[in-house]
Image (tube, rainbow, N blue to C red):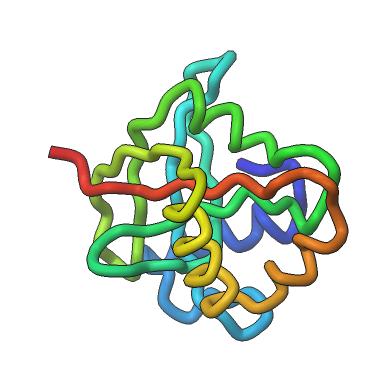
Length: 137
C-alpha cells in the first residue's frame, strides 16, 4: 500500500468494494493498476486517472507537476507487465512509454480526461512521461 494516506485509503476502498466505480479524484474516475516493484519484486497498487481509448489506457507520471517522477514510474519501466482494474474488470496489460506524436495524442486524451494535467505540465521542467497500456496476449 502507498505510504500516502489518501492514496492508501482509495486503494483499500477499491479492494474492499471490489470495484473502482464511485472512486473519484476531483470528480473524475480512476482505475487501479498493480505493478511489480523494481527493487522488491512485490506487488504495488497505483490508483491513476482513467484515461481510456479503444481498449487501451494511459498512465500519466505527473506526480502533480513535481520535478521528479512518481515512484511507480521506475516500477513500470523495470516491469512493464501489469494488471489494471476498471470497475470490476481486472485484466493484464503491457505498458510502454510513448514519445513524439503518439505521446502528444495521448497527452491530449489525458488532459481531456483530467484537466489538471495541463496545469501540472506548467509546474515542472520535465516532460511528463505517458505510458500506453496495451492488452496483454
